[in-house]
Image (tube, rainbow, N blue to C red; front, side, top):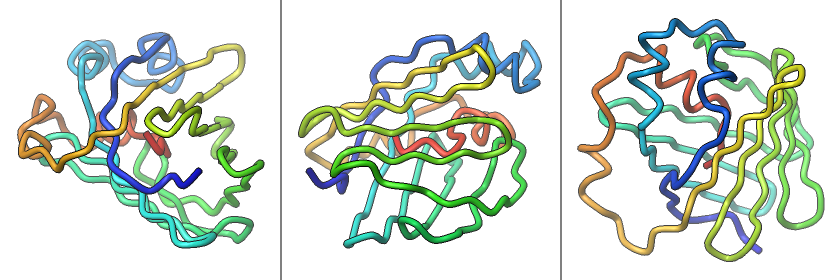
Length: 156
């Protein structure tokens, strides 16, 4: 199944404990817990471009499966990592102690699971068929550090 398409965050589990574990302040966690980001994934063979938009904040990561790429982390720093594919529907990457697995569970649903120690943060996003104008108006106008925390190498 191809990953290409636009997806909107539908549900998330363990957002607060995970964000606390990575050091995000409580006030930013409270502001960020209801954000509904839009992710656009462009897949051409083994090449990916992932654009996550929340309000006016945009996070873009590009990579090629199996090759080292410079990816942006939760802190905004660029870190070299290798994204691996398992089968046709799963991507894995390890970055700064966080294991991220993104799985296309069916034609319309992507699940991203991030694990840090014993804390598992799960995000489920649903494919959107149109290009809604509310992409530009979603979110809470949060600062870049919150967006980077929320969008940490998520492909959903």
